[in-house]
Image (tube, rainbow, N blue to C red; front, side, top):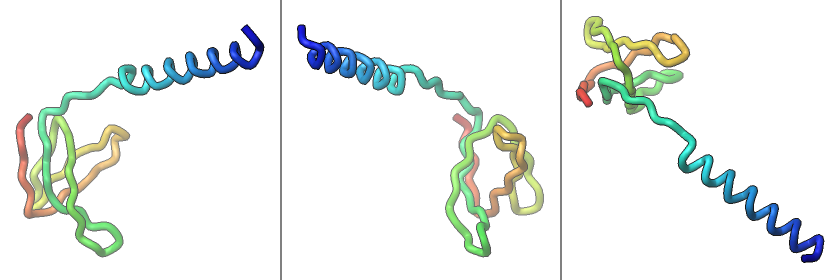
Amino acid sequence: MRKDQIYNYILHLLAGIAIGFLLFGCQTKDYKYRIVGKVIVHGDTLDAIAYTNDYMMMDDSIVYYNSDSSMQVLHSPYTVHED
């Protein structure tokens, strides 16, 4: 084998390992609730979907904590789906 053939073989092997890791190495978290509602960003109301294990209802909103411990608020109309 020539050097350029060995280089290409190693390059393809590493690319295959990287793709395999991306496809099969990621683990998903299971969440108890999927909440579809609205968020307000810079004065605009946008659709949002949140996945969480716990939430609190306050007035006409739902409050939950993100994985980084930041508090998030979803405004009505919202729907809570138990997964």
